[in-house]
Image 1: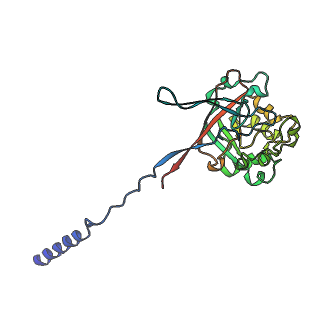
Image 2 (image 1 turned 90 degrees about the vertical axis):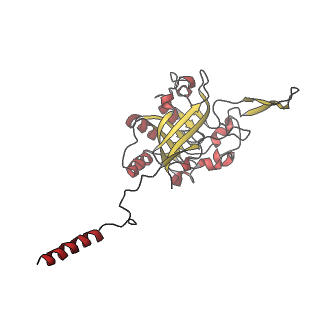
Image 3 (image 1 turned 60 degrees about the vertical axis):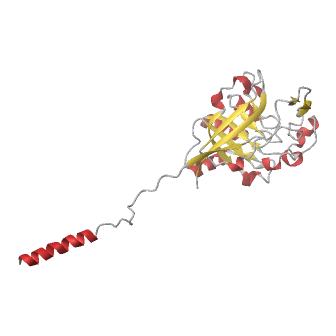
Length: 278
């Protein structure tokens, strides 16, 4: 009997040892979170003799002061440039359409830097140069995202028209210049009703669009400008590369030339997008 119990105990010990994981078995572990990286996307057009301006504005001009080897033996180059405030990728300061609005140098940096969202109306605007971004377009974005536009957002409107830049006929509607050309302008913009709705119902820092103006080309009274700028909401115009941005979750840095008393200024605007590493 004792012998039987001895062998039974020995058998149980042997089985227990065999049930232990071998050294080649890997214990279950939770995979580490994916690393993320920040990507900078330039939303600005370059300034050159191709830069698109309002049809009544002075265009960009670059004059060479010196370029080459100096008599001291070193290379040196320098240029002079001249331009109007409103052309190419630029900012409209509130004073542009509001008597008591802020000038470019007075705009708080907090209005130019921060979290942003993109409202994509490419599919409806790209084939309609007189398209007006509507309240419904804004509400459709909110419905898809399952939330309202977050307080303090910078709002960007993607019509897709930047793909035509710098072709004046496709981008502006005309390559003519002067007062008579204003009536020939055709490109999408933000409807005054949508501008009013944003001002009354959402708290946005600033707004931008990838067309020559926040008001559409056929506008006569520039009501969207007036509505937004009277609330000291800066406007960014002639943006590009909006197709490379997500609908939300990115940051904007929009720094204009600091012109004292300026109604507008050339703008270097970039987006910072966080991407998961593959």
